[in-house]
Image 1 (cartoon, one colour):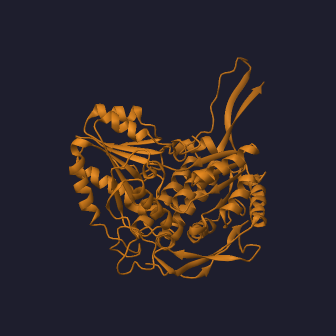
Image 2 (cartoon, helix red, strand yellow; image 1 turned 180 degrees about the vertical axis):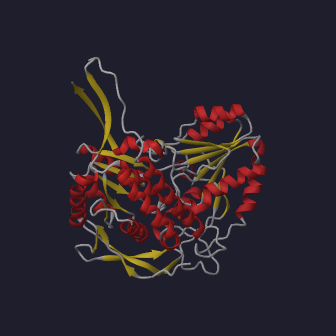
Image 3 (cartoon, rainbow, N blue to C red; image 1 turned 30 degrees about the horizontal axis):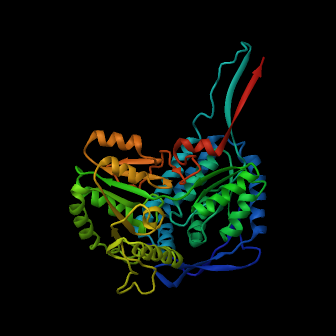
Length: 488
């Protein structure tokens, strides 16, 4: 294990240099497993800092876009190599900053490595098509051109994977980037940025500005020199980001909330279904946009499923993510803990039956952390808050139904449409679910959480702006099509 330097002061990365915020102000990043531990101090930047970063990115874009895709890809390959070498250090920073267990953090970091290598290879793919012209003496074809400066606004729940899966395609397709990480995980973001610096990324091509979303995020969305904004976060903030970009004609991409159902059919393998429900709903303390939230069970197997579920949940061990014995860590912040507890209270107030959990985690070593017990409700009805609103915590709502048709109807009874899964052995049920489920990601005999980097990812309804991230689909957002007509 690497030695983690605590209480280091981190800076913004602008135009190839590490610089303090103009105000000189910083704030502590707190370990959610122990509120007394400061992981590091991060800048509280202002609009002036953001403007400097955008100006640097705009200037760097002139040369960066002229490089070949292979040349840009080489920088991503080098960054991947550095990140892989420093994976333990980055993973430890992530665990200390946002609470997920060290194995999960390391897995996410290595996923970032894989994303960088994937998009490095994308630099060698075609960027257009030849189209027949009605003029026999003309050549007509399409090519793709970068947007210019892209603003990346990233959340705290995947502080390595999400910034990289936005930044890597932006860079490979010729854009320059200004990254605004979540303030809660700015130390982790700085360590990722160090990997790009060590890889030799040219000055101004990739910039990091840390600060409050209400200041830096808003200024990034409103900046006239930012050609595109890609955002992952809450619906409330996403709507403001999209509105600001729309108002000035900039391109925007929003990935927002989810209320993700898993359907347990009467013929399901209940042991596998329980395992998927727990993994999908409770790993990372339920702090995933694709986390399982509604568990919709055919009544024939409801009692058996519930018994197995509750039995396995009792075995879950809460604790510091740095401890090898911990299965579930704390909520990422005190604010997130309070949000989760407020939803648990709403569930009880609105008439749902609390089966297990429902309180702050207690016991040796948990006193100073933001822990909440894994929680399960039954008797949940469609109008209840815990059935409709994103909780972003380890809370499962059990809903009993009489048929597959009723299950799919209950699963679709949501403002969101990000991910959904079903456990069944019936091919007809699988096909019905695939056809009728209103979600951008549907999974059969697998948990709701789980996204492969080479496949498009995004939601329907209020879960997204209907664009797609990752895989080859990323080129659709990060470039514009240019049609070329050449007359001899």
